[in-house]
Image (cartoon, rainbow, N blue to C red; front, side):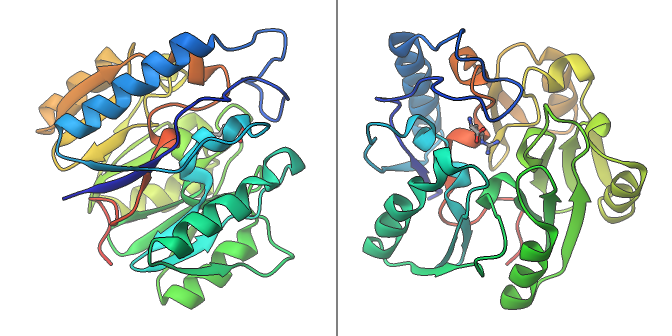
Length: 270
Ligand code: ARG
C-alpha cells in the first residue's frame, strides 16, 4: 500500500514572498484551500493510498508542502535545511514526526541548503537534483555519497520553477514529464541522455503546475487545466485525476508539493 504524508492547511496563507508566485496582497481563501486539499486527500485515498497526517502549526503557513520536509530513503529521513528563515521552523516539526514513526533522522552538514523531495527525485536508480535557487549542489553530492547512489545535478534557471518538482516528474523508471524551459542546455542534455521517454509539458501547462503531479502506480493526480499533458499521459498508459489546487498555486505549489511519499516513489528503484 502506498504511504503518503500530508498536513491539513489549517494555517495556510500567503504571509511572505519567497518565490515569484507569492504575493501578500493576493491572499489565499482558507475555506477554498481546505476544500481543494480535502479533494486531493480523498482522490489519493480512493487510489488506495494510506495518508498519514502531521498536525498543522500556527505561524507556519507552508507546512502543508510536506514534499519539502526532507528526503525519504528506505527508513532514513534526511531533513531539509530551508534557504529562507520563514520555513526553517518547519524542520524540527518534521524531524519529530519522522523519529516518532520509526525513521532514522539525519541532517545534512550545516553549510548546505537542501529542500527535500522538492529538489531531489529518484527516476530509476539515479537521484535527479535541482539546485541553485533553493538547494545547494554540494549538499546533493553529499547525499549521493551517503546513499551510494548516482546524483545527477540539474541547474534550475527559471525563477518560477524554483524547485525541481515544479518542472520534472518521474513517472516510472526511464520515463518522466519535464518542462524544458526550466533547464539550461547542459541540464537538458543530462535529462535526455539518461531518461528514455521524456514527455515535454507545454509552457502554459507547466505554469499550471502540470509537472507537479503525484504518481501512484498508473495513476497521475494533477492540477486542473493541463489537458494536453493529460492526453499525453493517456497515450503513455496512465489514468489522470485532475484536482483544482488553485489556492496553492498562489504559494507556488500544487499536488506533488502537498505530499511526501513515505515508501518510495513508484519511479524509484532503491
Ligand atoms: N511557498 C512554498 C515555498 O516557496 C511553496 C513550496 C512548494 N513546494 C514544492 N515542493 N515545490 O517554499
